[in-house]
Image (cartoon, rainbow, N blue to C red):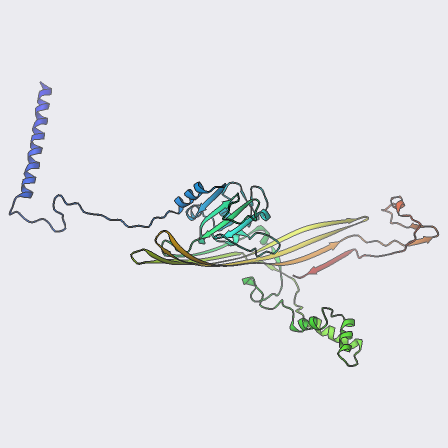
Length: 428
């Protein structure tokens, strides 16, 4: 009985709902009624929504490139680098398998040293600013200008074969997706740079990693080197003066030599001062413009990166030449300045055609100051000459039997004395 009542109630509710819907439909379609509110579409007409956006296929392109690469290779795109916050190419590459970062500058690929790796910029060879190394320091490339990185561990026909471990190709971006302006300031301290360091009177442009002429040879010495054929000793100067004619004495030659010596910069005395904290500044700006129904795009991106840091290093060297032992305590203060400038421009026509022009300026300067303190024992032993042999008086701590092998039929006499302590300071 209860179930039948529930069924009848459900049927009644459905009937009322259907009648209400029919009445609403009739009221909307009846002629002479109020017009439709403005902005509403007639029944049966669908509104069209169109969304226009540029395809950002950087990540997809990197994945596809890895799939199509015929040799073993690893890739990083700008999105992956920005997510982890790496500030330079060297820091980003350490996250790839088989790549080891050394001294925060150079990479080892497959366990091989940096001399077995090569670096290219947009496929072009990049010379190293360090003449003693074959590779370029990768910490000079900020990550802000990077579009993607490729580490290829095998040979292909489109890449130089001057590597044994791997080739690092740095791809820069020239057409940003949106207006870009970024300023980063950084500072820090290091235990190697917290103490007082060695400084001297350098040039006014040392903070830029370049010399303003303070360390250059004076013009008088450059002329004298040419005139006296690289030998500016008093004897050679006297010969050159006499060849030119006239009566000159050795005193005249010594006066010329003394004048050349006094023309040198002699303000090279070391001073101990507190070192400045590390400083880094990075400025990035760029934009792109579209025209011709978005078929053409032109863009540019520029970067200036500056870094300045101080480091102290101390080491002790021991030199043993029996029976003497000499200790050399070396104290070194290094001021490292790095400056990077980049300007990339490009024009893109559709998604298949692009022309790019890239300019890169790199500077890395190390200003070294070394102070060496040498200490060692000194003793003097007289030599007694005897026919057919030699006998020597030794200090008590050096027994004579240890020198039995020095006895010879050849008689030689040589005596020397060294100061107990010797200190020398060599400016850069």
